[in-house]
Image (cartoon, rainbow, N blue to C red; front, side):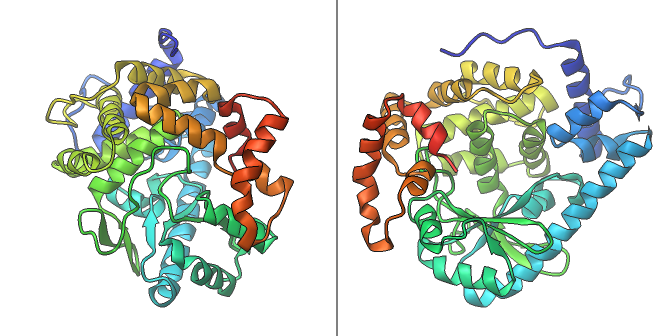
Length: 383
């Protein structure tokens, strides 16, 4: 059962209000004229909070004045974003021949679509989606770019790809590159990945010197909504992504809602609930129509997680997911959590590629050998 939301602390109220003020001003939305322009002085607590919630660039861009720690952090973030964008453009030149169906998700693509300036958005890595069959070409491209795989054992790495966990590489510049053929991990309700042939889900997007394939704003809105729920609503910056798409593309919610109806009840509830959260925290008037499938329980829990000084507890995140799942979806979620092979299985025993079907047998045996709840097993086995 999801706990009732606690009253929002004064610090949380003040910080979210600052972000709302900055967001609306930067997007050219009506704002409260009685709110004075703010200064970002030596406030370690606010700076740490802004870093954690990925809103440092947002607050810095609209501040009247800033102390050196804020300027240094904001410029450092903008420089990292520029390096990531440059790398994405260089990779796109390689992918055009080797992996033509690859799509850049979130990262600089979402920064271009949802933010007034690309350097304001904070992200950790480059995230790609491509067909299952593109695995070998993807690995060759990463090797040509001198990227080191996260898993040194190529057979073990192939297992992560095969079972839908995705794989990671580290570029010599230190930038992480993540790739998968699924939109989300195996046990989480999945949506169709954007493909270059589907114009409702994928578009050509110009960065600085190169054009990449990326989700359309509508499909990005659905991905961002489900991503917010997957992580339990841990960061306000992810809410700003959603709000930015709503603010910059007036019909984007209706388009995303139409896509979600072809996916699952969970996808539609996630979209409605995430957009309701963006409307409540960074609105009003981001969504011009009613949201009929908002989960009040999930909305309260998302707010609670955003006001907390600690990351969401796994049990609370699972309860949040459950609030949006239908009974049948809950059963599938639990079964996939319990029985889909994952990190613990691959580390325990490395089968050959031809014999990896044995993981489906070994996984239940591991669970029975070490009794625990299915959710605990999933939490341990996620990469």
